[in-house]
Length: 506
Ligand code: BES
Ligand code: ZN
Ligand code: ZN
Image (cartoon, rainbow, N blue to C red; front, side, top):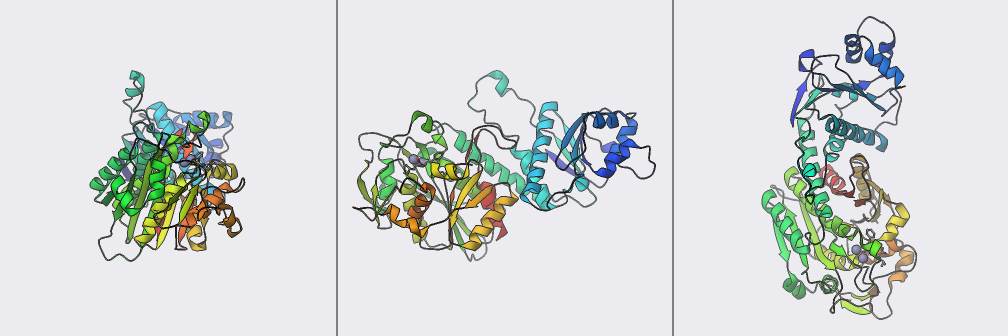
């Protein structure tokens, strides 16, 4: 898609679809026969002999903030439709809602283009507020992400033969040039988000631990990142026994992947990202129900987000080092599978009593966090589809955020709020530490009946030394049960945009 900037609306540059800001002034001008300076809408209405004004009135469109109205209009040659975006009422400036509104506008535009097979779009960018870089970014995110469709496993012809690939040209009308860098960077981040979605959506028979290794290697090669893959033999000699214990029940070998981005200059700080990479979670001997297993290919969404973030970071080039650690295996059942009651010594040295083999995420993360700590870094952020309890607490739209570092909490929530990803802080409650005490080992991998997201986070905390650590429980928002705007059914790619935002804001 070509992107062009024009200073002001010219009749010669008209596209098939016009996106206009429906301000109070513009809408009022439709009614009366007022003379003087009027906008594009009024002139289109005049050219259509009052058709647009009638339509606006008939459809009871008041242009309330965020309200959209699609008008089919051939008022000018080549024009097919006009999309009006309401801005007549007030909203809290720079709130989460404002950014969402722009993301929704991008989504509506993409869906309109798709249904009308629009080839060129002209956007009244300045009137719509798109000169603001954050709004522009949100708008473009909505536009790019809502075009996502995971159809590579469909064999039906009609599903595959989709010649329409979105508009060929997008023209922004603005006296100040729209930031090409923001658009280019947003494209990179959305491509990464789509990579994460694809990985989550792939069936677990294909997206195995070995496949994640292959993908990480591809990303490393393409993006010039350093990569180290620890295989089973190396994991044994490193003492990554909790990762190995989970992997034992599967025929697929486990891996621990480390991707490294190094800035060209001298790097000061190091940020380490850790992503849970269970490519399928059957629960192990503490087996899940059939229904509970249906979406468990999503249990590597943390890993997918880390691989994708590393890809985007390699292109965006922050000034410090970023590492991505991905412990990956399957949680399956065979004669060698870990049993409830088994005791395992972690890489860090603590012993763990495995009482529930379905609480496997914290086990593989324990060794990965220990490695990240051992290799020294300043900040650690882990992402994991860790607990059903977090979904019970926060529902599908909010990820749980655990950290004792107030600044880190604020920065992550702020980054998330800018890009439409919600985080809610939950406590690393010291009162509940005794719930993970074991009678035979140092700790056990389950807590009590309540506060399951918290006891899981407290378990992870045993393996990190730094206070600059945040644990993101993304069990709720990682996987969507239906199409919701720019979020499509299946893998959401949750976390990628927030992490990139967070990393680039420092
Ligand atoms: N992968 C699941 C958590 C999950 C559930 C993610 C639903 C996404 C959707 C995790 O490994 C798990 O099974 N956790 C258990 C822990 C319990 C056994 C202590 C849970 O939450 O039920
Ligand atoms: Zn599990
Ligand atoms: Zn799991």
